[in-house]
Image 1 (spheres, chains in turn green, cyan):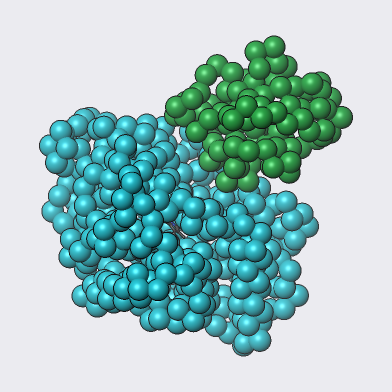
Image 2: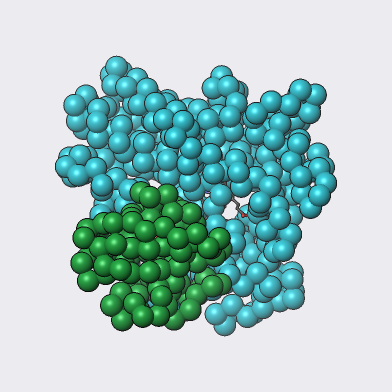
Length: 103
Length: 379
Ligand code: HEM
Ligand code: FES
């Protein structure tokens, strides 16, 4: 089980518990504001963009090549950007904190 | 030959560009995925601020209004797009989802009572029209009028599809809405504000025109392609049935492979270089979604349908500022369609098929069907 905290663009925090699936699914099922996930998680829409808090970047890992191509064209992309649908949840991510990217 | 041939492969691999004359104007079509996405973002060079000239061929002869928000650039575009955003987000509402599911269920059910149907006229077109009544929040009976207009509301080169029906209809509905506003799309347009003022009638017409034109043949071709795919691949339905989570990625894969909007134009007001091709000031390039969606550097085995393709960063719904506003609606409709087929249909038999051929000077491409006769067999 992992406890994940989302900080939304308006500053609200939301902590959810989940053992598997993607960060996007965890956000959508808990109605986290700003994660629209239009494409349903196939890495096509970039409406699940998050910034990983600095201390978690190594454990979450870097984006894959398709994901990077999408991220490169977003205005608010930085070196801590990921698409939430491409991040799988596991026990090692217990305590993870991410910020929902503003659009 | 592949079931889904890619007419752009050779040029994409060689130079990334294909210069195709449209109505005598040579237009460099940008074919590669990365180049296309970059161009779609660079509105200063590749502009949408050009009434009638974003579609290629241009549409001066078939409409009188500038389509909104598509034929504008930021920052104007951002404000225009925000005007209708709330309506295009309706497909996220539980009761709208329920109504679309219901509609698709009823339509599939009806095909099962028939010996055979002509899919375009008896399924895809009425389904598209009736679903649009839900998005626009108007009575379902309005769809009977829209269906009369055929698959394409207007079609450059087809004298019968001159767009006058649509103009007359929209004028009537906007007049009625202005006199007695309700909760429908037309009323919304008559009340909506843009930068602190009401929309002019011309702007209202521009929004409404695109809502009808943009989501019509795109949806119809994708629906027909899906039906035909299941007819040709009897195992595909059971594959989806085995795990309902496959429906969402399957829809994205059908949009990728069908890419019903082959390309769209951008105007280079100051001229530009596009992959070695010189575009004169005022000339155009085309963003070729259909080609980018087959880019072998991005998609493994690009001409093959993989229902569980993941990741699938396709650009069937466009890319960047102008990405499709109707995507949420189209996705709801297509996901509901796959669910209903899984639930009710054992298999589909193809009886007759005539593909729709898009024949241009430099390429020929299949987009959907002119006629498709099929039999749906109950599960
Ligand atoms: C499978 C179905 C569809 C496909 C493949 C599709 C494809 C596209 C593409 C590629 C664009 C980008 C155009 C550009 O960059 O200039 C676009 C824009 C647009 N589409 Fe769709 N579309 C579909 C359905 C719909 C539907 C159902 C509607 C409305 C009911 C719609 C309304 C729009 C609008 C309003 C825009 C302009 C957005 C803007 O300029 O900001 N589309 N579509
Ligand atoms: S949900 Fe669409 S890219 Fe993540």
